[in-house]
Amino acid sequence: MGSRDPVIVGIGWSDYPVVPELDAMDHHALALRRALADCGLEKSDIDGYMCAGTGFNSNVDDAPNMAEYLRINHRWIDGTSVGGSTFEFYVQHAAAAIEMGLCDVVLVTYGSDMLSRVGRMLGTSTFSTGGTRVQGPSAFENSWGNVLAGGYAMAARRHMHEYGTTPEQLAEIAVGVREFATLNPFAQYRDPITVDDVLNSRMIADPLHKLDCCVISDGGGAFIMTTKERARDLAKPPVYVLGSAAAQSHWTISQMPDFTTTAAAQCGPEAFGRAGVRPEDVDTIQVYDSFTITVLLLLEDMGFCKKGEGGAFVDSGVLRRGGKQPMNTDGGGLSACHPGMRGIFLINEAVRQLRGEGGASQVPDCEIAVACGSGGSLSCISTVILGKEGKS
Image (tube, rainbow, N blue to C red; front, top):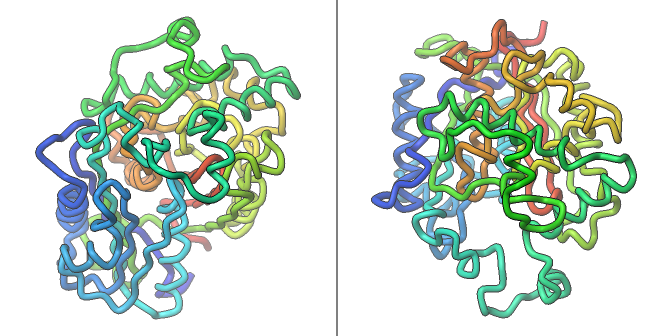
């Protein structure tokens, strides 16, 4: 390990799940203030900046605009936007920039007023046509009603057809995540649920029920990365970036080569190889849970179980509270919050667990965590392996 090895030193969240007094830019700013307070850095220390806009605010919250709004005097900036996995991509990009000396302290922010702005009227959001002209490949999908949940439903149905996965097994994912949400006082939904509750909830896109789908919320987050050497002077112990990798298999769901396999099959093993650890070494899994099928596919493709065995894997209880590899310990997108792009929450929760700051949801003896984001329609995937200690 060298002195410029990348580490995460500060994390912060804005308020969620519904905060009508804040717009998207306010969420960025609030999360930034809390991340700075967490690690003891000053805003003047930041010389690298990364963010992705929501698109709901005429893109005024994209990277250049937000850098101006937050008064970030950067010498390196990145506004890559690939959907929900954007922030896992950012860890990889920021780590490379830090190692190369392009910058020393990188700030990543995200903010969204998705629930307050558009509520559940998805016709006004970027997730459906909303009466406007749809251009590009999506025009061939949206005209048939294939928006958002439809693509995930096709993946779920195909997985059931090929491997015998059941709705009950998918429901088990939602039940386990809700178990952690009951411990999170900020979670959007905190009442315990059962498999029957999931199966009896309204069908959204067969075979996915309402409780197979993520919530819609406001919210935001921030994290700060720097060098191992710089971290020695800061308030909290650093969390080490052991390995990361990213890949894209498609963008529109009609171009997905195989409905049962995501790009995590490529980037998952790459990230673990770079980290020098195996899936069985992971103590907590923070994985994108836009839908229950998203979780199952990513777990299989990262190598936590063999392809087609995801149903049995989640049924075993390994992901539940008290299990060997507790998953989405903040309540996840299925129950706690999902403000449009949730990947930053995966990183922050992994850091919280590795620091031992998880409170009632703390994973015992947590030393290695994985954060795996999914952007688009199971399209752009990035896997990040984080550790309490650096590589020897």
